[in-house]
Amino acid sequence: MKPANYLEIKNKIPSNVNILAVSKGFKSQEIKTIQNLGQNDFGESKFQEAFEKQQILKDLKQINWHFIGRIQSNKIRKIVQNFKYIHSVDSFEKLQKISNISHEEEKNPLILLQVKLSDDPTKGGFDPKFLKLKWGEIQELKNIKLTGLMTINPKGLSSKENSELFKKCRALADSLQLPDCSMGMSGDWKEAIDAGSTWLRLGSLIFGGRF
Image (cartoon, rainbow, N blue to C red):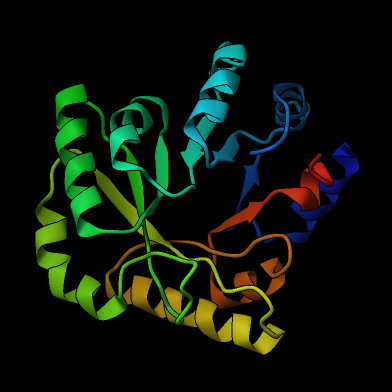
């Protein structure tokens, strides 16, 4: 891992765009190295792996943990207990369950709803039309703070195709008056910034390759 990678990227992005360092597959010591450079937001997609790192790094109180993986219903309570942000809420049923459990746990997680903007069978997410239809009900749910939308583009798209999908996500977020868009990864982060991303999910670009 080269800390210089992180600083180089940090210097290239506008001040209104946040880096979410995707630390899945990297060791807690590597997280600590990046955190020492001022990075406090880290994304994990597997609960057990994340929880082990959280225990090792529990003295670093300034770390904000983001859950970005596919949410299993039986893990929702643990996710609510241990993560400040949840980026990958892909159904109304899971959102309701997060709301109910957050009430029981006296938590208020920050939520980004995952939206599906292309016909990609490998990705989940809210259909935009369904999301707009349900928006009134969603806004009434307690103990969650809706801050934005999250999307993952299919692999193998051109720069232009990536840009078009990101712009759709930004337009949908704006129509719902949500400030945040979690979009853009190590291969398409520049297009995401241009389209209005506020959270870039960067792993290999700042940590190097996974082993």
